[in-house]
Length: 358
Length: 93
Image (cartoon, rainbow over all chains, first blue to last red; front, side, top):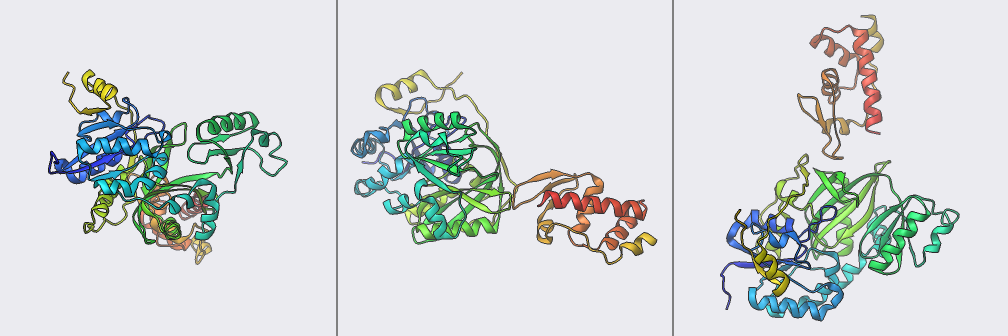
């Protein structure tokens, strides 16, 4: 029997390393803003040091789950175990690497009563980095030329093959590093290949201004509630440290075309570079909300709340018109964690959050 | 007056009108472009010119309007407007 009548939403991606945070904490924050305490939030993470798992304002309880590398059966078993305790109504995954597994697991999870709002396997594959150029062509959007490679030898004479430095070296699933010369490219290749496997992608570097768009695909070709942001400061890994909301009809139109081409269902982040000619070049499509999604609440378009309404099949409220000019600035902050909470996560893989009273 | 006549009917080379019109101008001189997310600051003279450029492209009318609002001779006003227009062209290339 469910111990609490409130709707229970489980959210992954509670990691928040400053140079590359997950989106889970921001999604939880958005839902808390929209629903307050009418919602139970269960934080799911991979490491007892994921700070989101210890933020009692956003998570009512926290659990560790198995890494995606352990396979879908292990993940399902762990989620089923957590479900026994928490009675999860909705699962909102926030990390790229989880998506392929959870898309496959969605029907089994639904049988347990855990609802989600995810793309199909085909939709997920179609926006993968190695197929992005093909998708961009289909949607009539520009994108930088990308080449899959399987050996670092490529960088010995890449300029003679028409690929002069600087280049962007990317993993098929994740990670992108700028390489100004052969040495840097080889280091990036090895690191990315070791973590994300082969092939590694080489992309021509586009100079310009990076803008991102977050929204939700309804699975029938429509893009709902887009929110756009221009990066104003980035971390060493190119992640937004500060950004400002913008609204550009041209970017909106490109995003609508991409979502229509994908028939995308679920949260989506579209990353583009506005090049020196003012043309939007598609860089990446992420199958989840971005870590800056709290900005959507700020501009009156709380996308995680909209997503929850869609999952539940509720009537969605009209969104506010675009509101350019709202800035966000990220900052690092220490969260105090009672030893008992940390111990509980480490030993039992779960924690009912307690507050640290100084 | 001669300068006014010289500039009469002359249009300035400016960024696209829709680009100038969409700029959010604050009395402090803070300027925000809601489409690109870029922001910059202008001084009082720049702000006065930019406000006029948002709905006027004729040099002589802009210079005359500046002359009515400020104690500035026509030649200086014309020079400032042309220089500022060049700056804007470079900024919004």
